[in-house]
Amino acid sequence: MASKSTQSALEIFKQLPPVLARFFKTYPPVPIKQYASKPTLTTAPDRNPFLIAYHPVTKKAHEPKISLRRQSDLYKLAKQFGLEKTLPVMTKKFGIQKMVSKKSMKGVVRPKLHKHERTAEERRAKREKAIAEADELIIKVKGKRYAKKTAKRALPPKNLF
Image 1 (cartoon, rainbow, N blue to C red):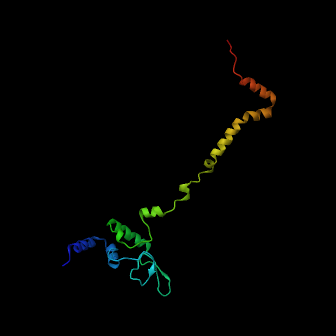
Image 2: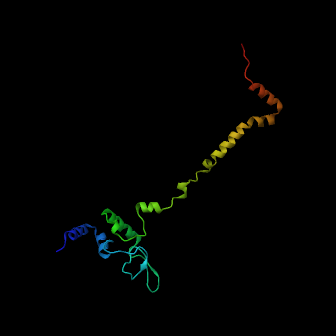
Image 3: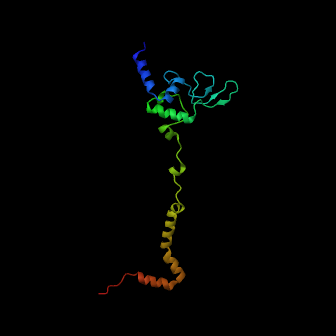
């Protein structure tokens, strides 16, 4: 006669989707069996189905038993049932782990902008400088007479009353 905890575990196991149930039949969940967190030999008893393994004689790398696409599908199914922590260690990252480990794109961190935007400040400073020096340049070109005329115009008007 089975205990209540094993009966409830069996009931939960029967509710799992067939894909996830087959995976857990072949590779028992982590609390029951511990899997290697690094690549091991193909003959190792703790071989992780999500990681590459090396042949004991030739030392050639064998692909993981379960492809990245199937790993992703298994993880998503396990997450729906709250069992993602019972899966063996994966090289593939999901959710927040994926976002944290990902390098930000250069254009997002410091956008290049358009050329007219990059040079706007420099052009504005050049324009202000040219406006400030415009009177001196005009006087230089037109001569001293023009300077005297502009000086008379610049004086404040006399009281007319």
